[in-house]
Image (cartoon, rainbow, N blue to C red; front, side, top):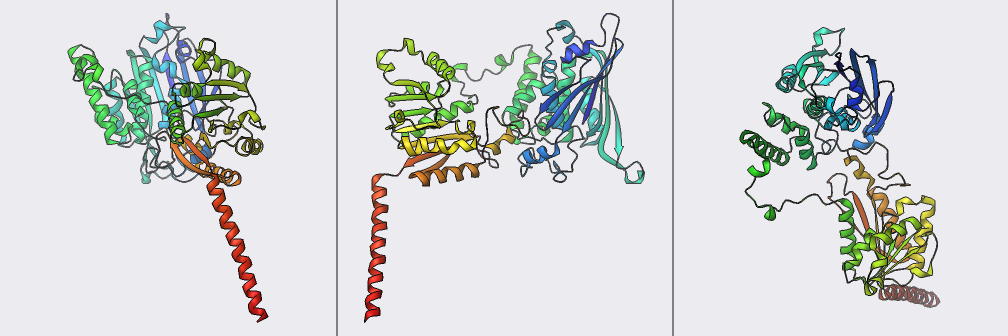
Length: 515
């Protein structure tokens, strides 16, 4: 898919200032990795009189299918988000894919930030935007109704289904040229218009629409959306017709409109609830929810002496120290640098004697058995196993489950199925550059059950984070519990009785044959 942004210059402002505003030099062709392919930025022309920047989004259709496989409705509800497995309109027609690329590649320009030319970023420009293929659900009239109230002049040319067969009529795609004279819009405003209205015209989104989409819409719509005559349609389509999100967006936009009318701040208008009594909760980071889930599982298991294996910079150790139920906490990591950072985080050099007695940090490799790890109630492997090569995983399994053998072992790891919900995660990339693998829920459970059976543990699985109905939670946790001696004795007794019954049966058969 393709989009160009052009401007003209004047004696006191060369058109090539566009390169400063976009933070992309006109002499360079640049490429950027995005969620579903590669975005290329180049300049077909760059003179003092006229400058054009082009954004070419090269969509990887294989990655598109892999990231969206089986998730059609969940990723925005578009009935034709994929016309077929590998043949669809997504690589060619401007849509939310292009909107996300605009946001990723021109993020500073969209915010109106330009350190090199700060005064130019705040000045309106003569602009021309051209999009050769734009889905227009609602036709040319809707395109004009969306852009022209914002100061654009829209030239909308329907694209025929087939130029050789005009009787077939027009497709739902249009060739769009947007022009705005000098003194109307800044570049940042123009980019924010495109970011919101491209997916609105396509009436589809390629990623899961969640609560944070309301904030994105209001940020990009600041200064123009509250008074737009098509506000209702824009909010509904942008939020994939999710009623609760659309209602929230409209309520917040109405507050903005009232505040503008009264020439006051939104906070002064929205004063029905005291700030101290405002119970609105901010989203809790996944890392915090992961630690909370681990602490809850350790508490439920009655653990007091805990190993944090692969403790990194000590965030979990710090959380454990705040709970007096954990009387002994040991952090182990192979990285001396990580242990140094953890020591500073915990302020070990200034910690009181009683508190210092509860915590120990030492260097160690989880690929080798270590007698220092024996005798603890629980061990935690939080976001650790995915950093090991698969061929080294059996060594870790034996070191923890076979040699150290704590009563409880907690293992958390990313759920790779959830990666499709991360809008900014490039297709085919792991969540962290050091991850050697990331497992699906089934792959993780197969591994965990095999380890549990081999080493005499039971295992249960717990989701961490909001569980998506289609792709599960962002993090998956396995809780291993060592079989008690009673369980072993019971199994041994059953096995012995079975053996005796077998022998008794054989003797009875021999006696019958003898008779």
